Amino acid sequence: MNHPTRHAPKTPGWLDWYADPSVPAFRLPPSAVDTHCHVFGPQAAFPFAPERKYTPCDAGKEQLFALRDHLGFARNVVVQATCHGADNAAMVDAVRSAGGRARGVATVRPDVTERELRDLDAAGVRGVRFNFVRRLVDASPRDALAVIAEKIAPLGWHVVLYFESADLEDLADFFASLPAPLVIDHMGRPDVTRSADGPEFGRFLRFVEANDVWVKVTCPERLSVGGPAALDGERHAYTDVVPFARRVVEEFPDRVLWGTDWPHPNLTDHMPDDGLLVDHIPLIAVTAEQQRRLLVDNPMRLYWPDEAA
Image 1 (cartoon, rainbow, N blue to C red):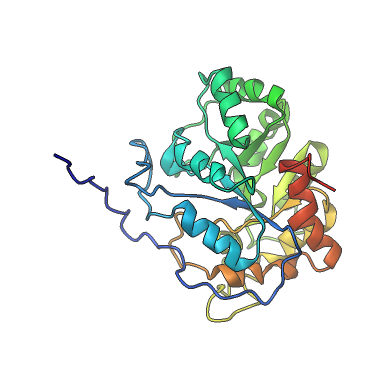
Image 2 (cartoon, helix red, strand yellow; image 1 turned 120 degrees about the vertical axis):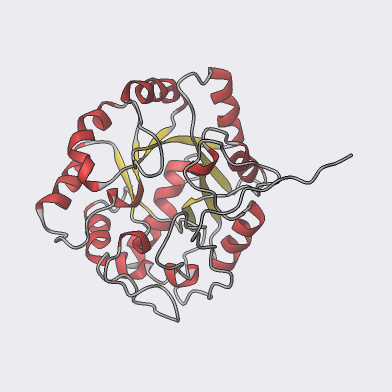
């Protein structure tokens, strides 16, 4: 006798992804890559990790690929969501199902074996993510993460770092010691109430300059304090974030990446229209050359080097 799967209820106040995104006014260049998105379950097929800090809505590969096509992207990079812990099954399933049009970023533990890493590599995984945001994960022991970095370096993978800007000073030496390229999520979460020309963001930029670092100029909806939100046709959204992202694009045109962050985990204020998020791109990458590097050349070089022009 089959018993129905018991689904854990969503975290109170959880905002589901925007169900009917607009068609972007900004036309993405051919072969554009969404380098930061996730899948959640679906829970019936891919249960969430017992140690998770939140329980999201279902947001599976079918919805992700439909959004990809609707917005005009050619490819995705699917980043392991913290709600799945180190069980990469949902992410790997999405990447394998994409017919070569997706790559993955995994979460692994220090005891991961060489065989397990090679299996992930064969599936399309090209990096691991280290999360230092305390509200999302328990403490990240540096020794354990250093072991992981040593194990993935021979595969040519990179390390994706998620941290709060205030913590960079304490973490910078550790990050610089890792034996792999670094990819920083969401510009290191700068405090956008401060100046993009000020010392705090300057410290971040100098860290990027001094190391083998790529930067995702992503998630203005997370960083913005004054908005306006990417809703109701607003194509000049999150103006307080624009100077930060534009400065990164101008200083490091060959090391910037962009992604939707769909399905936008843990947002509490509003859920953006993903079409209007795409319309934010020309505010931060203002020339056709900057846009092509941000959306095509750079992600292809990092994730599909054999196909990069």
